[in-house]
Structure formats: C-alpha cells, structure tokens
Image (tube, rainbow, N blue to C red; front, side, top):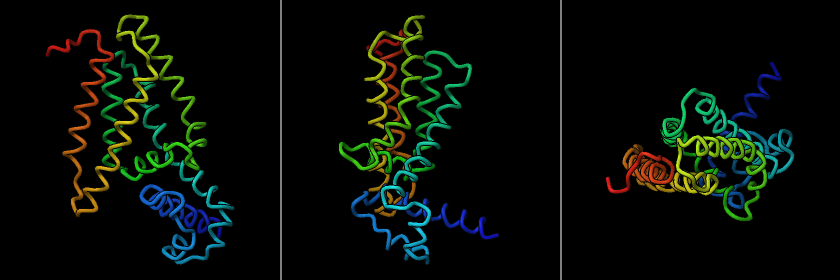
Length: 205
C-alpha cells in the first residue's frame, strides 16, 4: 500500500510540475508552491527527484515519452510519402488540443540555454534521425521533393510548439476551446509541408 501511495504522489507531483514549468518556466517554479498545492512537504518532492532540475528532467522525460509514442505509431504504419506526413501533422495537432501543457513545456525547454534543453535533445535526437533518414529515402524514391529534411522538421516543430502560446492566451481569457487557432496553424503547416515535400503539389493552386 505504501509503494502505491508513493507512486501516486510522484505522479501528482509530475502533473503539478508540468503545469508550472510549462506556464511559468523553470526559474519561476517553486518547489514550496508545488508542495503546498499538493498538501505535502517539500522534502517529499526532493525524496523522489533530489533537485528542482531533477524534477524538470523527469517532467521532460514523461512529456517527450508521450510525444514520441504518438509519433512512433504513425512512423510504424504502412503509410508512405505525403500520406504519412499528413497523418503525423494531424496527430500532433490533436495532441496540441488534448495536452496543451505538453506543448508549453516543449516551448520552454526549447529556448536557448534552457535548463531542460539538453535532456530534451538527448531524448528527441534518435527520433529526429529516424525521421530524417525516412524522408531521405522517400526523396530518393521520388515520393517527396528533394530538400533539407532537418530544416523542414525544425520548421514544423517551431510552428506546433509556438501554438502553445496562443492556446494559453485564449484559456487565460476564459476561452477553453482553442479550435480556431489550431485549425489556422494546421492549415498553414500543411500548406508549407505540401509546398516543401509533395512532388505532385503545384504552388499555383
């Protein structure tokens, strides 16, 4: 029973820390405030994570794990060429609506010099390498335009992560549904990806 309770407490700490890190950033996040909101002692947080940086790394690992799992589902499918790119974009924007705090965290730790940036890079690099290799293969087979795959991936990543700010502003104003900005950004990203990658797409359309 004790182990179960500890596991439950650890997950609750991660949930509250995710919200704080993603909306306030690392420096403004207080372990005392997290502990107070959960009705536990600060020492309980340090028991599980040792330091505030350790807590951030744990939050990043869980968030990146959720993102990677979702992306892996599409990458492991039988879809090819543009169909797979389209499926990836749709999946990520669904994730943006379902878990906006995840995007907020990625935005915060993607900033230059961020405390969690190195950990995120370590977690995401294998997936980035796999996606780049797949795109190069598709380009070689003529199913995608020849371009710099890493530049395309980073541009798409920036668009999606930037969406977190718009969702936060809307929700701070009491507007829970962020469908409009998500739909707009999704259309913009899909057009960019089509122009960049789809060999059958004409920019004159």
